[in-house]
Amino acid sequence: MPRQAKANTIRQACSMKTKKIEVIVEEQPLAFIRRQSPDARKRLRAAIHAIEHGDSFPDPLDDELEGFYKLRVENCRLILQHESGDKAPLFKVVFAERRSVVYEMFRQIIALE
Image 1 (cartoon, rainbow, N blue to C red):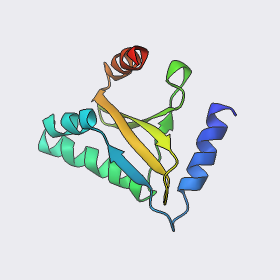
Image 2: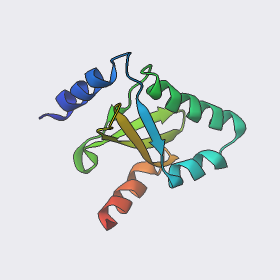
Image 3: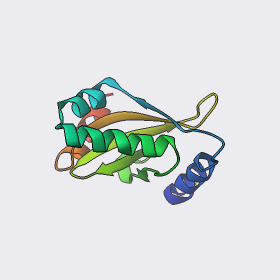
């Protein structure tokens, strides 16, 4: 299935207002968020809550990062992975960093796995 078609299918499944989208933040992104200024922390958390409430949806990534999604919050990027949850759609925030380095660092991490 083409990347955009898959993203649209997931988006439609997540857009059902009766279901809340579950977002799990792993340790590295949580530590990144905690290191930010109070205003930046507030914006990052608000962006995650917007996904949970169906008000926002992360954009799919291309090439070797296909299957992952990005969430842009000013000069920060959160990398998410979609999984099927038991009760609701599920996204895991698996990596976060500044826009200037996030994709290269994440490529290196997944190459090691």
